[in-house]
Length: 109
Image (cartoon, helix red, strand yellow):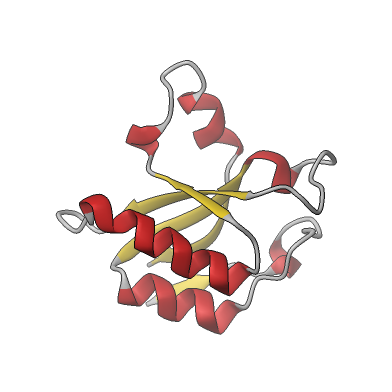
């Protein structure tokens, strides 16, 4: 069973989270967990900001270079440019902080 965590479970976000589309997207791309981080969770988010998204794929399902296409598809769903990152993509200097502060919006359960 999977779940999409909606706005009611977290502070009000400056972007819409179309729950059904996010769930379908995550299932299609074998995503275990999707979480927001960065300015979308802070007061410095502007109309020009991208959306930083942390993704964890199911074991053995990391897509390699296809992650660029996956990010484009998520950008279409959210109506914003998405910067899609795995935890391994993050700098060791701020990885722990991002993992701690990220807010899950989808998790396969």
